[in-house]
Image 1 (cartoon, rainbow, N blue to C red):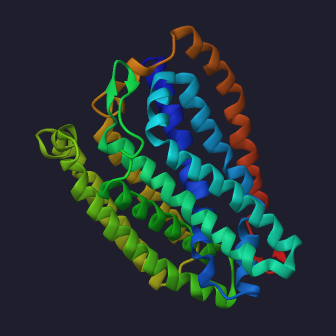
Image 2: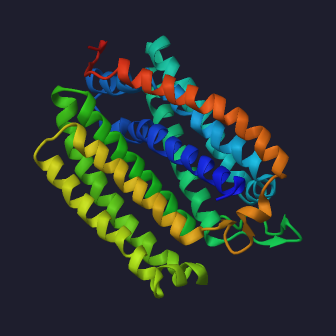
Length: 331
């Protein structure tokens, strides 16, 4: 355990926090057209209104941390995925505008509702495809990106994009199951079951595809003694998936959301099994890409001061808005 490993853990935590927190409000945007205009859409929007903007803090921390702690990785990954990163950022901006203007411009609310949906969908697909592009490998020559503008566009990245989009939809539907009442909640239960099926089907497809993308992935998952540990991840995923479906059918409220978070956590563990210790698979390890030791120490002091504050105000916001919501807001 050295500073480079600590920084890798910090960035992995920030990415996971972003995925699960902003994931559910992106998921609500993806599902938004399926809700009836009026009460159901207002309930869905009000359920995330107090927290959606703060959730994106973790994206800034993850991206900024990658630049600061692993500048070489940042310099390789961004040129390889520029179209996806640009699409994601523009979609998040457009989505944020739509979120505000649907309340302030009711005459054009149907347009802003579709803009909210479109921004959420594009952002989710771009994030999933970026992950797929990283996993399938980035061509590096002399410590610089050596591929083309379109290397990121492959069947594998499209599959990864669909998987992340379905997973976000699952998080969003389970959040609404927990947070709203009435016909909107009934609709959310139905959407959650459909999203869970789609997520698990795509998760299985990606899991079967990934070991054949890079030789190291196959060795990590299917050779002894690695298989003894790695096999626990799909086993636990199957158990949690069973509990998730049972919870939805029994109309539990908070538990499906927590179980869907657990599925994402297991997915993150699966990524760690496949990639560690590479930050750019089969090209750059975390030590190859790390900033100088003094820089890591200096930044760690800053993170040690700011991350507890971020966790505190995030926890406080979720605690204050812990109740149920209707079209008028939280109660």
